[in-house]
Amino acid sequence: MNSKFRTTISAIVLSSAAASTALAAAIDAELTQQIDFRSADFADCLDQEECSVSGLTIRAERRDDQTSPWLTANLYWDPIDGLGVQNGAQNDEIDIDERIVVTFNDPVTVKRVWLSDLFVSEDSRYGTFGADRLLPELPADTEVAGVSLFDGELELTSLAINGEDRLPWASFNQEVDVRFRENGDLRRRIIVNDDTIRVMIPGDDLFLTAPTRPLEQDQDKENNLFAGLETVELDITDLLKEFSGSPVFGVGSRNFEIIKAVSEDPENIARILQIAQQKRDTIRMSNGEVGHDVDFELKVTSVSFFAPFSASNDFSVAGIVVE
Image 1 (spheres, one colour):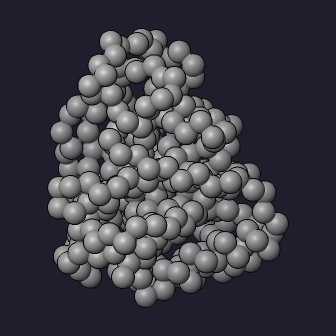
Image 2 (tube, rainbow, N blue to C red):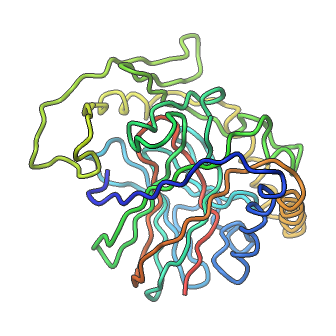
Image 3 (cartoon, helix red, strand yellow):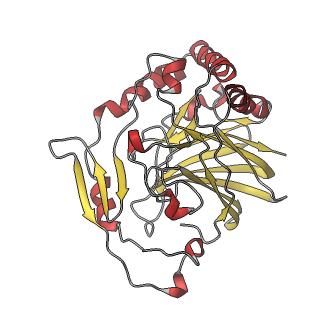
């Protein structure tokens, strides 16, 4: 997906309760006076293709396959996770055919990015499998997010950020507000398992299934991400076209309807923000928050957040630390 995919692999550690809550609370401390997409300032971005807030512009985009142009999509926002892209596999997150582009009015140095909903062990709930094909050092059911930094049209560097916490037994969002529903954002889902790719959709036949098949190798165009690794290139164009036109789960708009009402009520936003922060401080339940340092002093004009194609890589963007 990107020609320069710089990877930083974090060790996956089972933390103590104290360590877990300290890490979760760090996101709130670090994003104070920084770009916190969970704040009420960004509530008006919900359901917009593009929005401008406090010196930056945020745009949601989607494409049918890796050779198609990026087209406009609609932003998702909530005060617990931050920004995502509507529809796709998850109605509230960035999926494999989606991205969010954040453009700054003036160049900035990005010091750290904060993501949410990035987990290990989603296999039991969402069919995650295959991340080790992308980053061999990781367990197969680890989610991976992509972040690219740009100066104008020039890509300066690209990062791969992996989930660190195991998917909890219950939803953090439901812990904050019982109105949120498990699978209340599920629209469609792609599941990769060995030599088949499946698209889960509603109806009597719940899966579209297609066998994978290798393509001719073109060394001149080989993506450097896979250089030196044993790989099979898959042509999923036809499947993704079917996927784009397939039905969606009606239940997948449930949480959006709740958030839409919340976004129009500043007091309700403030209440959820406060409860979410209290929960992060006090309970042992991860929301998949991952903070990642950018180890380069680069002046950037935009940042792109995307999900590499490898099973269930979907996540939200919580914030950016800049100077």
